[in-house]
Image 1 (cartoon, rainbow, N blue to C red):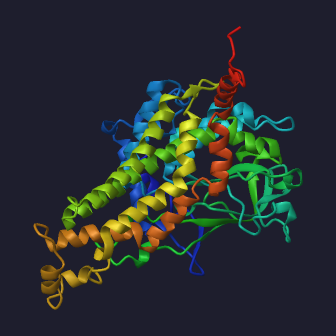
Image 2: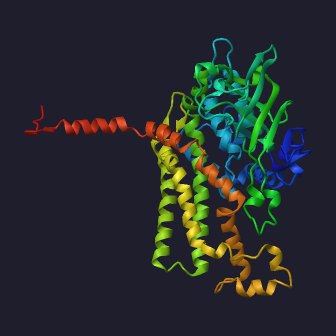
Image 3: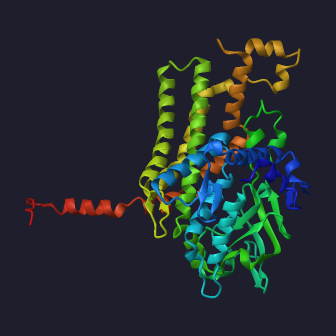
Length: 488
C-alpha cells in the first residue's frame, strides 16, 4: 500500500502550478500547499496500516487495495466501504472535500460498467477498466474538472464567442487527441497525481467537440493549474487558524494548451450521449455522492460538537432558548446521518452486481444541503455571539509579557483556562468567519451544482412520485359524489 512519503516524493515532477503570477517550483515545499499535502500523506499512511481496517483483497488486481476505491457487491461490502470513507473523513473532520476517495469512488462505478464506454469507432471500455485497476494498484490520487468555465451560463460552449474556451478536441492524431481550452473546478488538482477531465453539464449536438472524457498526469506538458488565492500562507499559526492551516485544498482552473491525450487515456471521444451515461448509467453519480455525504455527515458532527462545547464554556447550555438551538442543530445533523444510512439500507444491485445506494434518501439529503449548511452556520454564529470577536489578535498576544496577563485575566471562563477558551473560539471563527470558512460555505452550497438543479433534477426525479401518485389515484377512484364505490 502506498505511504504518505511515497506520495510526497512524486509531487516534484515539473507540474505547472500558477499562483500570484508565478509558477511554483515544488508544490510539496510551497506554503500554499505544504500542510494540506501533509494531511493527504497522513491519509495514505492511515490506509497503509492494516490495523485501521481500510485494506481488502481486490479481485480486479488480485491483490491488496484501499477499500475506499472498492466496488461494493454485497451489503456488508457497502457498509465496510462507508466505514473506510468515514475513517479518512474523521481524520480531516470532514474539511477535505476532495480527498482521494472522492473521484476514486466515481471510477469504481466506471470500472464496474466498462460497457458504457464502448464506442463503435474505437472501444474505450478497456481504457476505463485498466485505469480503475491502476487506481487500485497504485492508490492514485485523482482530482477532477467536470464543469465548463463560467464564460456564459446561458449557453453551452458552441455558442460562446471565441474558440475552445471550454476544453475540447482540436484534432485527432495517430497518438491521440489534441485538446485545447479550460475546465473548472479542479479542487486538489495541483497536489493530485492525475486529473480526470470531462463535462457533467448537459451538452447539445453542436457541442460534440467538447463531449470528451480523459485522465492525464498533473505534470503533463501543456497542462496548467491556475489556482485561486490560497489561505494557508496567511494563517498566522495553527492555534489561530486550526482548520485553514491543514485543510486548505487548492481550487484551480485547468488550462490546456494543445495537450496530447494518448488514446489509452481517452474514455469518451466526441459522444454527447455517452458523456451523460458515464455518470448515470454506471451508478457513479449515486456512489460518488454517497461518499460525499459520508464526508459531509462527519463535518456536520464536528461542527455540532463545537457548538455544544461553546455553550458549555459560556455556561449557557441550561438556558431553554440555547437548548432549543442545540436541539435544532441536532435535528439537522441527524437528518443527514439518517439519510446516509437509509441510502445504504435501501441500496440495490445494478446490472453489474454493484450495490447502488438508495437514490431517494441520497438525493433527498443533497436537495437540502444548500439549506442545511447555512442553517448550521447560522446556529453556530448565534451561539458564539461576540465571543469570536473578543479574541487577541494572534497567539503572540498570549505569549508577550505586555499582553499575556490581560489576556489570561479577561479572556477566560469559570473553570476554563484562557488558553482553552481562546483555542475553542479560534476554531469556531475558522468555521464561520475566516476566508477558509467562506470558501467552505460556497463549496457546500454548490457542491453538487446549482441548488435548483439538485432539487429540480436529482431530488425530484429520484423521489418516486409515480408510485405515490398511483396510490393516490387508487384512493380517489374509490369514492364519488354518491359515496364509496363497491369493490368489484
